Image 1 (cartoon, one colour):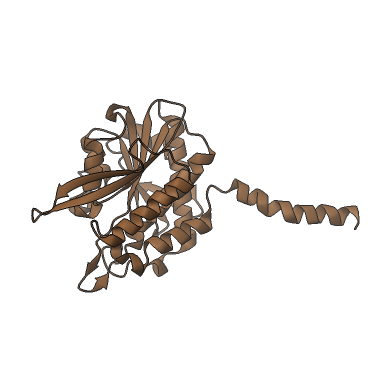
Image 2: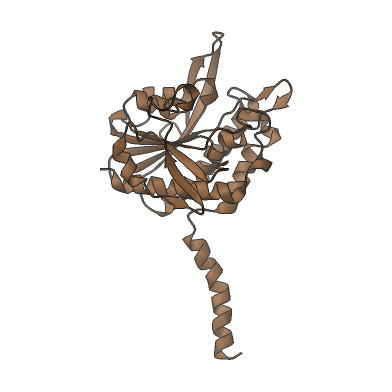
Length: 300
């Protein structure tokens, strides 16, 4: 074999490994996790059901694989609340830590529950919010390889669909000093960016975060701002308290909420895995990782 052939063979073997090393996260794993969390077998992951517990155990095992640091009680943070009928329900948040250089914390979150089964139809909640939960693993993978400035607290909330119960319980009794939490980056519905846009909500209230996010793009997905100004956005079009970032905002903790515009499959049994374009979803997650990295480096 001549020298040129040896060089070409070496390039052929090394180049794919170089590309993989440069990737922000395992893109195939992202899609595999999304598929499992939104499968019929989990029956919509409603809080308090055996299937919700299966989803929670899956999250715990992923946190272990990613070597997130648990708290003294472990990864699970249980809480209890009463539903509208006065029935007591137990929920469980899942949290793990990636240690940074500073003594402050950024909470990166997504809820893993959905609405379950209604009229014998399974509401799989692929976009809402298996997409955010799967993205949590990718973000944890990234920060595990790139030591952050702040401590990164990765949290999968339970009972979002029952009134932001998990996030409310967390903010009321966090596993770290609440005064040291400098931001919440929340994800809820981050897969179906059908118009090529991912929304960052929250900069109306926290304009100091906007410079870290302006101009970010990822493979034809553009980050846009909105759904927070009360003069422009009314009712359900105002997302200020629409997901788990709401309790953080009430506690005056700055937030950015990443999400896509509502689509016809929102809270419908048609919110299924087959409707997700993997490349679009992967691009959205890459964009969120860019944003998280910028905010981590930019915040004091």
